[in-house]
Length: 244
Ligand SMILES: [Zn+2]
Ligand SMILES: [Zn+2]
Image (cartoon, rainbow, N blue to C red):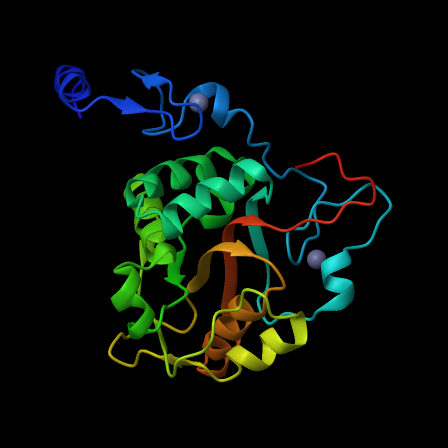
């Protein structure tokens, strides 16, 4: 977008930071001021090579110690903190779909993510049509499309669909979560894709990983050889947590 057009639009439709309400003029983010964006501390090395959980220098991964995964690797840009949770919450439940581009921009600002997503075919975690009907959009798909809009080597394919309705994962303990999503995804056979392609299942958050893993398992069972996963944020558990 040209600067003159941007200035005109900013005059007619002023933009404000979704956290502090500051009037925004120049920022790479649309609805986030630079000061608030700086509150989001990206996940950096050292991390677990498998699930992307941050590690202290001698520790093993607390997530992989508890769960096994079907993806080759997963990466998240941020730990779940007050700020990242609020952003996701606004995108998911407050109809602030315009935030998707800021979330995508924030993700790609993390060098860890930029390399990881390069040349990837993003596969959003599908929403069942009944929930889609109420919410009218799938936040994972919005995020995927926003990433592809910024990074030309990234594409989006709706390779998975929800086979039956499952109750929301919120409030279920980890074993119940696995049971709840078991066998709930199907391959969308209308889309033909090389089984050797790099496919990246994408979602807003990773908690236990049950939903994402079920998606990855479905892709592997259908012959995909290189299955990865990525989320905007993930829960992290540090022994002496200074986050949040
Ligand atoms: Zn702000
Ligand atoms: Zn791990």
